[in-house]
Image 1 (cartoon, helix red, strand yellow):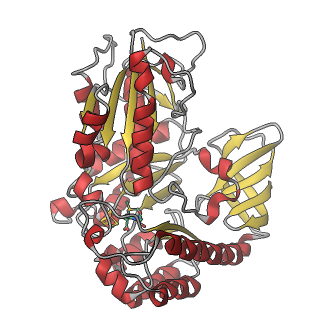
Image 2 (image 1 turned 90 degrees about the vertical axis):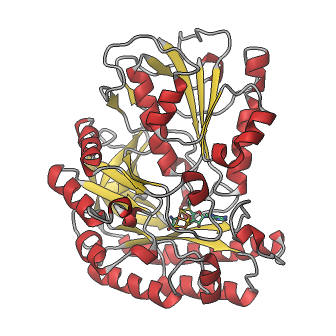
Length: 481
Ligand code: SAM
Ligand code: F3S
């Protein structure tokens, strides 16, 4: 037996990787703990998409230093809650670390970007891995950590419990002071009974603001049979909701000349599994074509979520961002998607204060938000990322000014979300129970929004039906029917 703790920064793809790593460690006799003082292994999965995310990773790794010097930390450091249930249950009580000091492993996007700096600043880190891909992290881990011999090895043999607490800072989450209107019931967003399956790693787009292609490399698709195997595994573990992940998921298969492509992937998952709710993230507007709209967006077996990051409402800024679509094209695609599906739940990402963006250009973004009326949006102040093209553009606008603009957009979007989502009041919707407490429960709709309901008899992960009584921006209150 050995103990481990994980800390996840970044997008849902990082969450998916850490879930898988934790599962494999449990299969090897590991017990996940929430106190780093009890851990033989500490795994830190990093994110560099914006400066704040990177700063957080640095400060977390720095805070681990006393563990190596004195063997323990006096202050509590927040790490991920256990999510994996197996033969060994993940609890802290009565568990101690085997080793005198833990092994610290830092992996993910920070390593290709600033690995040398991490090594210099934190010489006590035992292992740096340039990717968060579970097979690679686990195999590199064997260079610094000796696993006890456990029958079954790295096979996926343990059950998974999707309930997860702890802040999961997604790329499209309010991790850097920016906010999303979904924050009305913040604690409600912290648990999920949904499985994440990565289907495409890397990104072939070269948006001028984005560091992802540099740190994650070119697109590589996970073979369909492997995706189907994983979805089946999650189904057998009781999951009713699976989200397929890729930074740029619509170009699934680009490394196989699109044979198979994204539509083939979805067809295969739907044909070979009985997953009730299937979602996909993130859709680049450039890659959203008529075939995808008619066969995937419109498919009633797919959840109504379409996350279609627009980034800006000005043609000039979109071109500078190298997004490869115009505002007009974006609007046309939205119109087609809405025609194909009247319950479409449309969300987006917007960057405010791209280098050189003027007040007038920012107002075009406000105009676009008013015109499209997104159900929800994730809004960020531009964060210069060294190594990207945009970091070299001159940027006369002050940070303060950008913050003011960002707040203006956030306020506008909150109003829009409130109005758009009010249409659900009085509707009865299927939902999956996420959290069950004595006084209240939380269920999640097919469009991934929490509904607070009075206590339910159902268990987390099970379906129920809820009637929506109240909407607060894009969170809901209702009753079970
Ligand atoms: N693949 C997605 C797409 O099609 O746009 C986006 C993935 S990106 C990792 C997630 C979001 O982070 C982006 O949509 C963008 O809004 C935001 N983002 C990325 N780089 C950023 C930067 N340098 N500053 C601020 N926000 C950024
Ligand atoms: Fe980044 Fe653009 Fe790809 S935002 S992840 S380079 S689509």
